[in-house]
Every structure is written in structure tokens, then in C-alpha cells.
Length: 356
Length: 224
Image 1 (cartoon, helix red, strand yellow):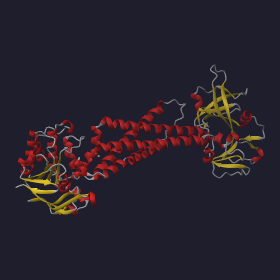
Image 2: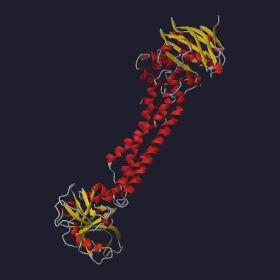
Image 3: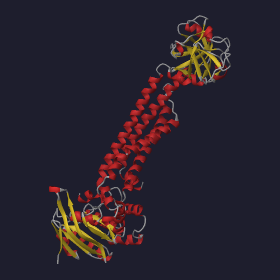
Image 4: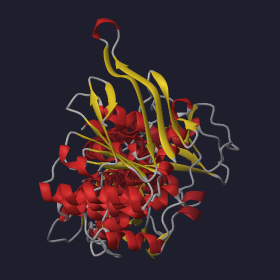
């Protein structure tokens, strides 16, 4: 540590440049991770907020809620209190009377107000729960886009007007804000007759009390994986992050290799004087840890500042335990990168130093 | 008192037709308090002899005794330890780390060796004696060649070794500086009671030596 710190202190500018490079890489990794989690969350926040454990869909729907339609004869006559019908349809929202003709893509979720999701799982941040047929509770995301309590909205090209009476958070599905309404309104928007009662059944139990023999059963995790684009999007981010980590490993290895190359004669002389190789190896590893730690901490600070200044429309979610885990991986990768120069140090021939 | 004894040392490099005999039947003894000068042209085997004395290489035949220990029988780790405790090196390139100031050059030795180094009072005296006591906060890059060489000598003495091995310590110095370094080496041997062995092709150091040897084509002979 003594040698590592002294050298860093002496060559501040050189080490500052390396630290900045590591900081930028870790910053990029953290921001990408935040965006991956943010987008993932906007895909599934509503499903998670319902405490979903199992989902039942039409057998031909291939796990896609919006493609699924359930008829009365596919369902038991009465659902358990832990089971709820859910109808989904994508819509375009237009604010009535707005001069700016605000239009937003959204997901309408039709619920039965007597079932557990509507009764227990819609946590309001403002306003009240819907009491009338054409009252809706909407995601906070719409408030950020200028919608207010009492605003009247149209969904798709329907002439029917709905009034926003409440805002709720974590109500996002397929990266769109959710509008909670009744199953009847959902039927109208979906353009189906009364025989079609919902898109699916959601339960917060692993083993539901009712039997849904005619439906396909999905765990919450499988259902989320089957959300359109969800897996492809996550895989893309995961590969980007993995490549960045490999790049950071190569960069730290190359930097430490070059720095060690420049010090080989000094190290050889120290070895000739009897300084054990473990001290020099220790100095190199300590340098790798110090550089990675400084870079990663800098990256975390920049990430934190970034998420404070980013507009709420940018889907970014900072999961600090995951960031701590990634930081640890980056530091370990830095130490792995240091193994190359360590090997050089272990192979130093002090005789060559004397001959030079 | 004998500090180091080499007996019938042979060293060769390569095998078969490409085999080169570097040292042949070399025997050598250095006593504490004396400066031994080994003179020889480039390629005569001077540096090889020095590295064998310092335990950096092992001879193909013969033995090297330091403090009753045969270096050829020691493990690399034990030889490291022996070098750290019993041998000080002074090299042409001053062997100072560029990113440590003069004070830290000694601190590094403290950290590695722990104990057995000169007490602070003796180090202060040594630094004053060498005229480098005011340079403690300077880095090697800020010092002249002569100052660097004196710091290197002080560091070699700091571990209180019984043997000082100097490899071409005056190669880059002018005549005045050669005289200063020669006197310093002599002083290290006599005042600090060390066995100082200098390998060089610089004949100007001859006047400071207690014993002078000639190394030619791998054969070592003592001058009368």
C-alpha cells in the first residue's frame, strides 16, 4: 500500500486520467443498469403492484394478456377473494378541452371493483377511488405530463368521456401509464360483447382456490418474461453491460501492464536488493483496488447526480444493492486485470537489471 | 574478519558448441573494513561475478560463503532475505525509486525489513556525513547525479549490511566526482566496518582500494 499510494501521489495526473476513464466506464454501466431496471419496471410495475403470483390466460394467447380473451363459460361461476378478472387494451388518451390536444399512449386495465385488485391494490397518491362507471384512476406518469384531477379524457375515438378522480403510482404496463377503469368500459373499448368478460385472471396465490381447467397457467415471472419485447430488451441491456465490464477489465489490464512495464527496471533493482516480490505484487494489486474504488465511487456519485437531474419521463431506476454488487464485480475485474502485471513482476530477473 | 568467501567458482552460459565459460575457477575473499576493487574490461565477467556474490545467480561449481552460509544451498527466498539483511547494492543507475523522496527511500526499507536498520540518530549522522541531510524531501529527479549516488550509498548502508557490492558506481561521473565517490566507498569500508567490493573498469578508483584484482577472460588474479 505504501508504494502504491506514494506512486499515485507522485504521478497524480497520470493516475487521475486512469481513474476518470474507470469512472466513465462505471458511470456508463450504472446508467445502463438504471435504464434497464427502469424500462423493466415500466413494463411490469402494475403487475408487481397487484402482488401477482399466478396468471391465467386463454390457451391460444401465448402468454400475451392483450391477446387473451376469456368467456364466461371458461370461468368458474364464482371467483375466490384472492382472484381478480383483468381486462387489458391499449388506448390513446386525449384530454377533453385541451388547446394543446394532449395525446398519450396508455394501457386501460378494466377491473371488477368488488375484487381484490380494485379493493386493495390500487394505492392512491391523490384523489379518490373511482365510484362511478366513467371515473378513472390513472398513473402518476400522466400527472407528470400535465393531466390533473378532474380532467376529462377520451379513450381512442370513443365519444365517451372519462373523468380522472385519482392518481396512483407504480401503475405502468408495457412502458405505458395505466388507466384503471371498469370491466364494462374495457369491453366497450375492446369492442367485445358481454360474453367476453376479461383478458385474464390474476391471483396473489401460488395455488389458486378456483379451478381454471380451460385456461393456461403462468407464474408471474413467466408471464413477465412473455411481455412483448421485455426479454429482448433486457437481454440487449445485459449484453451491453457485460461487454462494458469486459472492456473495463481489458482497459485496467492494459493500463497496469503499461505502468508496470515502465517500472520493471526499478522493480528489478528492488528485487536485487532483496525486496520480496510479494511487496511489489501487493503494491500493484493495491493500486488496482485504489484506482477501481476511486473510479467506481466517482461513477456512483455521477450516477446519483444524474438521476436527480434527469426528467421523470426518462425511465431510470436506481437499485443501490445491485449497484453495490456491480461495483464489487468491477473491483474484482480490476484485480483480475492486475494479474497480468503481477505475472510480469513474479518473472522479474534482477540480474538483467544489474546488467542494464 | 572474512565477510565473503568464494571458492573455485565456475560459471558458464549455454550448452554444447555455444557454451561460453564466463568465470573459471575463481576464488576470492573480502574482509570487513577493506575495499576490494575488481577491474576488468567489458565482457570480462565482472557483473556475473557480482551477481554470484550477491546471490542473484548461482555458480555451476564452487561455493559462496557469507556469514557461514553457503549461498548455493539456499532457497531463492532465503537468498532474498540474506540480500536484504547482509548485502547492500550501489549501482551505476543509483537504484532509487523515482516516485519516492529521499526520506521515503529509507521508509520503504523500514517497511520491508522491519528491524535491524540503523537507528535514527545514526541515520541522521550518516546523512549529514554524506551531505544529503537537507535533501530529505527531494525526489531523485530533482537531485544531481552525485547527490543521487550519495543517497544510494546511504540507503545501501541503512540496512547495516556487512557487504557492499558496487557495480560501476563511477561510470557516469567526472574525475572530481569519481574522487568523491571513491573516498565515500573507502569511508564506508573503514569507518563503517564493511566489506566493500567494487567491480569497475574505471582505473581512477585504484588509489582508494586496499586490494585490487584483475578479471580477464573469466580468470581472477590479485595484483601484488
